[in-house]
Image (cartoon, rainbow, N blue to C red):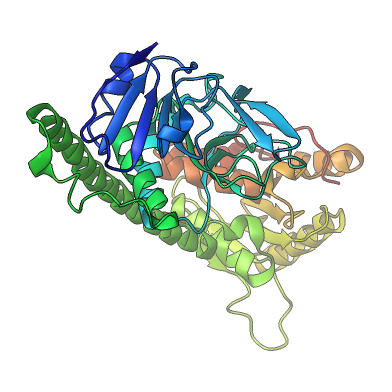
Amino acid sequence: MTNQGIVLSPDATPRVAFIGDQEQCSSLQGIFPTERQYTALDGTLHPPDYDAFVSVGQSERPAITRGVLFGQQALMIGSRDYPVRAHCSTVATGTKLVIAAGLDDEVTELLKRTVVPEASKLLGSGALRGWILNPNVRPPSLKSLLCTSDGVDLVMHGAPRSNKAEELWLLPSFVTDRKAWLLLAWRSWAKSDERLPGPPHGYEHQAWMTPAELSAWNALKQVEVDRERMLGELQKREDDAQRDLDAAQDAAVQGARRLLTEEGDELVSAVMDALQELGFEATDADAALKRGEMRRHDVEVRSPDAEGVIIAEVKGTKKGTATSWFQQIGSHERYYMSQHAGDQPAGKWLVVNPERGKAPDARGVPYTNNNAADLAVFGQDGGLVVPTKSLFSLVRDVQLDELDATAARRLLLETTGRLDYPSPNTDDAG
């Protein structure tokens, strides 16, 4: 069954056959000089009468070498002698869309404007289908223009059969602005065949649009303007947020993060800064040493909530904790007493950053298992092991106003043994 459709000039080229539902095809007509519609592909269509065809939702295609196919269901590919039927039925499972490199700007723009938005909505839904062509039979003349990240082709262009002079454009059924693709195809056909004139210059200009087309065109352009504005605003927000994050990360590396990454003098400095953040007075005990004087504990700590001086020894290592550290702070405590008429310090803290080469979550708990007995003795004598993981979390919660600084100081002053904050971890750190 045939339908004359629109015939502007029976002699003007290109002569184009439209094949498909009358309503869908009629919305596409009025572009080519000679057009005729066929509601079905049957014996009444005589391929030699046409230079090209436009097919909408068909399972077969006519024997015409040029065409634009919207929602094509099947295709013969390969060579003329050994063709293979390929079906547009593979469900795409990829999570991204990939536009082929090296395309003309016009093709890339059309893909982004008329295919990508709708395809993006269908990603991961199970409703996005396309072509998976066997590489052994797929001719190099058939190029993928847009595919999903799992290799399902959505838009293709070229010759499905390697030994036939064909130029087809295969597009999904959900593509928008189909007339723009017809004009693109027409220009491409005219370039490859000098006998075919190209579309008149300015054919798609607004002056030749119907009022309904003009209204829809204006609405589309406004959406494009709004999209670019919104994308620009979002890009600026993203850039600003990235700069803030970069600055915060730089500050963290030079600041509190040192509690988790450093050893030696840098770790001592980080511990002093953290204690001062909690409201303690922290001073470097070794800074006032004169030449030849015995090295003391690393830090002296004073609290606004209690009398006396707390001595603190700071240790950082890529290995686990050592029992000898208890002996060192014990030696520092005896020296302190010798300099203060036998008075004991108000407390003794061993601040440790073991396994500093690991991510904090991958580190164990200091002084567990084989070293637990040593920790118990140290705690019974009023000592406190302060893992820098716990000190970092304590300072962070105070800065986030999730913990009062007074409460944080009380936790340090009243705990013996080991400070486990915010919650105990039973992993072994040696």
